[in-house]
Length: 248
Ligand SMILES: Nc1ncnc2c1ncn2[C@@H]1O[C@H](COP(=O)(O)OP(=O)(O)OP(=O)(O)O)[C@@H](O)[C@H]1O
Ligand SMILES: [Mg+2]
Image 1: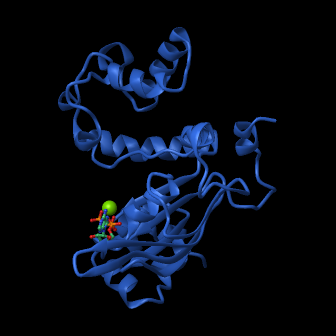
Image 2: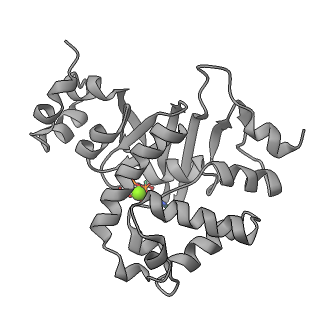
Image 3: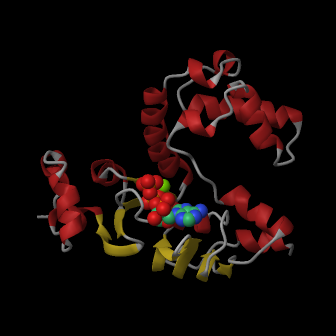
């Protein structure tokens, strides 16, 4: 079995697909160092959406970068399907990046404005070594998924697509993909309302620490932490709109 195959082994039932265990990230800054992520442990389960919520600077992106293996950990372990991937390199790491990927919130900062949609997708998917015909089919399928007409969309440039509608459709697409393909999602947001709309479980971060975690219902209806309560107070309609889900 190749290294890539071993990465794809499915975990035993109930085992997390992806985990961060006691992960810490420190940055050296002028005048000392800061702990952006402080001994965080979090598990992702197959087909579930986990939201990480917190104000700016709480460490969400840093945690995500370490999970995506885009930034080394200071300490701790990243485990994918039961395998320690904290320090994998080369083809093993490329295999990991095929499986574990990011969708960025702001479509305009994440796309090169000089490439058409078709060129951008071709570059991204081309890196995976697919044949031309397979690539064309895949691009068509993907554009269809996000509700765009492939024949039109491949020739458009990012500024010709609406950011708001891209974001809304991204949320809906994530829901669909998870239902149809069993995709596991980490959803990062400032907005606890969006998090609760989309996620099965919510983790709240403050100053690099996880201060609250639980099922979405538990976090909304029985928040334990004051910071979580403050975030919830900013979305007064949330409980009403989700009341139907409240456990009796
Ligand atoms: N490369 C870096 N060098 C130094 N400090 C950094 C670096 N990246 C992040 N930080 C610091 O680490 C802390 C966490 O940053 P991070 O970007 O992870 O927060 P965030 O929750 O994603 O914030 P936002 O919601 O604004 O995206 C912040 O204090 C930030 O200034
Ligand atoms: Mg961030």
